[in-house]
Image (cartoon, rainbow, N blue to C red; front, side):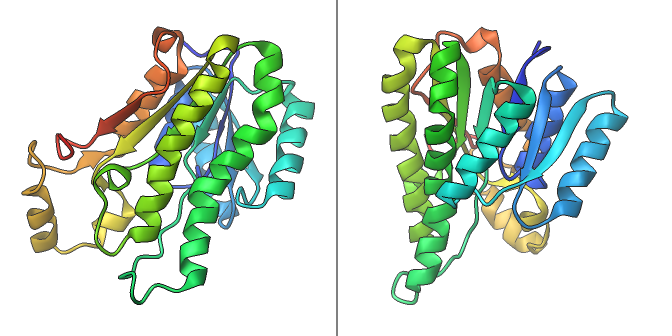
Length: 246
């Protein structure tokens, strides 16, 4: 399905990013597994991909850094000559009530979650436009649609990502480049595994389908958006949340 394509997945060392990287590789793409902090996690993802017959490389970059992102993109293009699929997944949380939230925690979340996506799209824009094709998939959140108490920074960053998606989709549509956003709800990851059973039960009661989603639910949609079957879809925000935001 994606044979011959080169995909860059930011924040791909664990969780949703890890599942996306593995899924794209399983379907033929050469995957750049980006990480910032944990080299070991990223290398584990690469090892799993290669064990299953796929091709991948772990590459470090702090996507919130404009200059570092530019150098990172340049390095990839020099080596692989192109990037066909960009998945902006890198994200952090610094939760707190707004009356207690520090400026540093607000900036850290916006810089990674929103500016990081801008940086990657900005530095790859010439390459995408020159090849007159490309798939950009931004991982937003239902928090960016509904808001969430104690997550004003995170919700703002994810809402901003939706605006960025729609604006860039309009700019790039005439060049054959599709730009879409995926908005996960509560997904079963390492973060939710630490929750108590009672907390999980309460959480699930808020979801019409009655359960948390799986990382595979997100990755399967990203796979669809990365392939040719989605060529007539752009500027959309697709919720994968068990009906929570309807």
